[in-house]
Amino acid sequence: MPSAVATRGDDAGAGTDDRTRQLAALRSTYPGYRIIHYVRRDGADGGWWAFRNDSPNEQQRLKGVYACVARSDAVSLGTALAEADALLQLTNEFLKPPIRPGPA
Image (cartoon, rainbow, N blue to C red; front, top):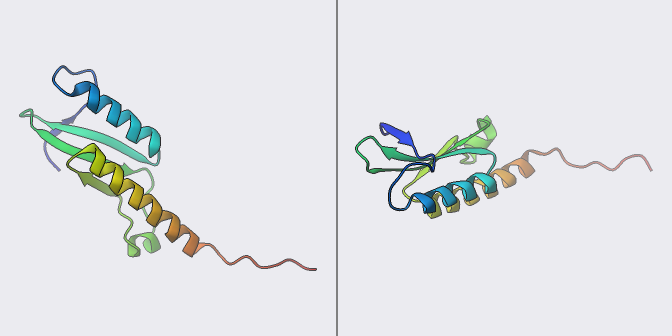
């Protein structure tokens, strides 16, 4: 992981308002993740990172669910998280026990 500081939205500089809005949108859309935009100590962009609040279990990991997702921009991260959530839903459906009818 790069040596970095997280963007909080209160720093000065071009694009800060856009980053703040993107960060807020991602956080509200994907509450199951801790989402951070990093700015490296030298001022360069450190990318967008999402860390799952809950670690994936063994079955989820085998299906390709990761604890951390990183992308170079907010749109790419949003796309990756949508794919991860879809995979997680499929994995969870796969893990559910079958519904058995009750006594008639």
